[in-house]
Length: 313
Image (cartoon, rainbow, N blue to C red; front, side, top):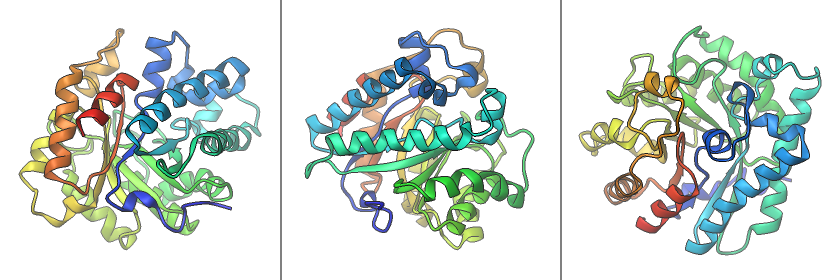
């Protein structure tokens, strides 16, 4: 039985933390190879499984220290069917590994959740293609059909919700939201933006959120912004602070680096950015928009970033 699917606690004003940049942490800080940047590969070995446990526990300890709640985002950003095929796994690996990822989240919740720290299990959905480029775009219907398989699978587990991370074009975000609606599971949609504050497909955040809501009858539980530095989108939020679409944004998972997506794509070294500046920006955003209460990180961030963010907030 799911625990929070019918009443997501992060829809309150309580603070929720999440993890940072899983893939960049494993590759650059832990020295673990991830083919195709796919952390699902870690579930294929005991060593990888234990590395994931240690990774999440680092963040859970921060939530415990500051008595905040926590979102357990599954390591499945690249585990939809196309990525499983690229990884050349056995045909049944799609179902086995995705379910194993949710079971890992359940085990962590069973071990660490208490009255001071609610822990929501989210099945992470990533883009079918490149997270940085809006290429090979699907139609709304194609995106619904493609992502339905993974979302249906999560709906049959104890996942409380699904979260679509690094959505870079409108059609895929809408298709995922509609697939979640069809499977009666809550969904959060997290858009990424370029340095100009716009999605890679050219839509503004305002347009992306309003159109997604219009096309899905407002089905997403909330929206997020990820895989962009705070300086890439703060001005867009600050200048539109009184507009209603802002209230639909509940979460931030920023990059550590101020580099563009194109620059990050070419990077061979980790850019951890300025921790003090980033955490101060999170604090500023929370003060200006108190309804934003879900805080994690993306590329280049690790537990030190999240600790400082929690401290500032």
